[in-house]
Length: 512
Image (cartoon, rainbow, N blue to C red; front, top):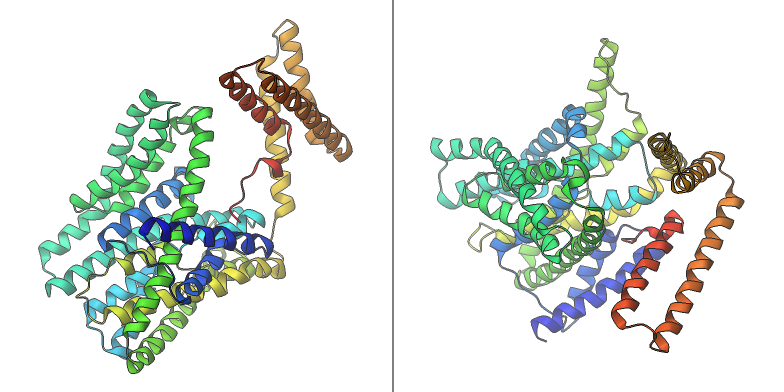
């Protein structure tokens, strides 16, 4: 099969697996990880290859931009302590433990063992976020998980690059250490400056396809330039994206945001799918090339690494809770964390794209590369499949879901927004102002009154009216009363109208 045919075959498999994920309410990374191994085991399965140096930028940069846009700077300030614990301390402790396991079990050199630790240390909150979308938990838990996935990558990749450089060069001098020490603050400063530059360019490409393309170019260019400057590419991408998003409205028009959201949702999903399917293929190639003894050694290493990363995160989660409770008894004002929420934070340690991309990026001359890569893949597979599949029932079992609270929160915000609109219209005269006031009053009273029958009736009538318009529009096109351009223009207007009058569940594009 050609590369294009292989890619199409994998995408068809991904769409089929996505339906399985929806049917059983599983996070799609869980199903994709299992599917990657299953597809790779099929004789004659398509084979894809990717340049290791390209893997990090291709898989990680767009994911970070997408996540950073949704994580406000204020949240990072409020969660400074837990983010430091989970995004820095937990990564370093986990990497240290895994490095010891690698050195003790299979005799990896110290630098190579630390490289393995950096590869498997950072959790990826993609699976957790997919679950929390359908079954929300406390906002502070969700914010920590999302914020952690942004900043732990920087810690892990700085450690990965430093350890890999030491391993491949055979030394780690003071100049190299100083370069890596400056990489983090330098990456932040560069990211902020580059984000401000992109903000100035945005108005010139607003509401164009080029504007969406610029967003992707920004993601990759930030990463590549930071890499050439020997700065933290992760922090540069995160800082630039948060700088752009800090502008009211993210610096984009409503039309641009709707278009960009649809494109980015698809691309991020595609990258996740591609990475997990590549993992399965790489595992097949590695396993077929290893002897029986090498497979046994790799299996034991993978087992101990999986147990180590899971246990370490749980211990850190409960250790952090103990510190918080102790500081509260000492009179400090801190947000209490329940044991159930603590366990959820500890269990939400699925490894994903960063682990896969860094494993792909290991050079061929790396000591025991196949064993290290196989162990990394085993960690991803075990954590994503086992922990990812059990998150949903775990949240239900612990009784920490807040689905009703989330709906109430949305209703309260809608009432607040309606009140803001009415306040702006206060004192305005004329029929137009009266019509708008009635619309916002109906919206406010409908939400606050919570009359399901009335609201459902209203949605049903509004949808029926739009469908009647659609039917008439098809007649006008059929008898050629309107041109194709006019048809598309009016069809889009009816699409927007139908989305406006539809319920929340009809507006959401599901990931799984």
